[in-house]
Amino acid sequence: MSSKTELHRNYAPLLQALGLPPRSIPNDLLRQALTHKSVIADIQTTHLPHNERLEFLGDAFLKTSLSQWLYKHLPEVDEGVMTQIRAYVVSDKVFAEVARDIQLAPYIIAGRGLQQGVQQDSVLANVFEALCGAMSLSLDFRTVSRTIMGLLHKQLERAIKGEASAVKNYKALLQEFTQAQTAKSLPQYTVVDTRGPDHDRHFVIAVSLNGENLAQGEGNSKRKAEQMAAKAALKHLNALVPVQSPMSPEAQAFFEVQNHALEQPQKLYLAPSILSADFGCLKEALEDVRLGGAPWVHLDVMDGHFVPNLTLGAPVIKALRKYSQQVFDAHLMMNNPEDYLKDFAEAGCDRLTVHYEISENPRALLQKIRALDMLPGMSVKPDTDIQVLEPFLEHVSLVLVMSVEPGFGGQKFMPSALDKIRQLAAWRQERQLDFVIEVDGGIDKTTLPAVIEAGADAVVIGSSVFNTPDPVQTMRQFNKQLKALEQKHR
Image 1 (cartoon, rainbow, N blue to C red):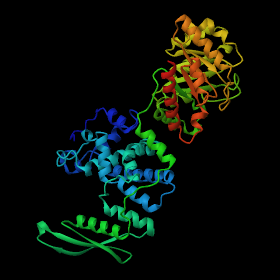
Image 2 (image 1 turned 135 degrees about the vertical axis):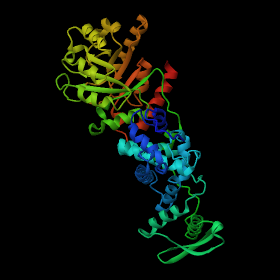
Image 3 (image 1 turned 180 degrees about the vertical axis):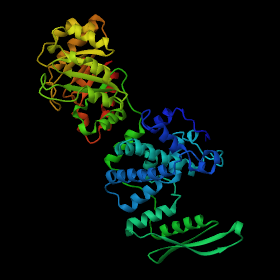
Image 4 (image 1 turned 90 degrees about the vertical axis):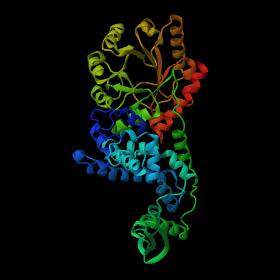
């Protein structure tokens, strides 16, 4: 454990281990979370903000996230079993195990008395809880909860399958169980007997509930005796039994995603369109795209004139840019794109596609886009002959084939788009060009194979992703399908 504040330390590897993008938690808040409260005992470090308050907040988020997951994914399991699962997962032993998985110890700033005890479970668990507290102050609840459950998934699956080792904190388990069964009642612990010298004291402690004696426990400390009493009480209440819960399809899907490496194709690109996402939660939609493994984000820009809809523009894209490191693939469906090219470049667009139908000089427009350090693309509406693009293929980085009428999401795929894709792929091969063929509209798991077989490289998928219960899992499934198609056709 480090004893230095290390104000300029690179926390990116730690955030990556947590499953978070760089700079998603401010450095000063990270340092506070990583500064164990033992520093207050060191005269030279009393000025450092420490993690006790963040630990309190993180504990609440950990329990809330887990409880919400159990309620949603194990609908057939009674409260007693959920209590046992939760008591195991939110234990110091489990938190310390997760802390070791993410290699947390080298980042911890501890008091001199703890600097040699790097691997103490209580210290690792304490700082892990504080990290969760720092997450809760920096990110939305949905992201924090998803991150927490991703970190705890191995231990949670172990507990559900009945493979977890005995719960060490029997007091916590007894309290959870009695609260679930009797609402507000809490177990009471009473010292019945002590014996032996002060340096080797032996305790006998009884535990009761609502005045009724449940059991007794013995140990060479009050804490040990209380734990043994709680364990005996759980046995008396028939509550200390191996937990093996029925795995719902939702839970199975969750663990399947968590336990497998993210499958991503190397030459085919998934470009989810946030036009189909909840516009009140676009930041969260970008996080879904990242977790789903999609390398591009498709941005549909509509002016209400070229197409009968009005969507986001450069200011919104600029606001979203800081929340994503994915390629921003913008499709301008507007009459006068040349007036706004600089705005889209400054907003952070990586690719910019314009329509052939709106420009008197398409080549000049493409050159302006490239001069602003964006990759130029061109598209045509479904009823425009693809032949009009042939003179410009050497000047584009991408050709976007519209397989629906531009303007709205959720439309059915037009099979006529396949002929356009095949023609573009033939031109590309004949002329040894390297532009990307992208397809947008009505693509789902049934239409995707034909699109890729025809020669497409990138697919825009909107409602088939964001109108599903779990967009992250859906994107991972699309990537898995794309990888299989890539191996077959590329």
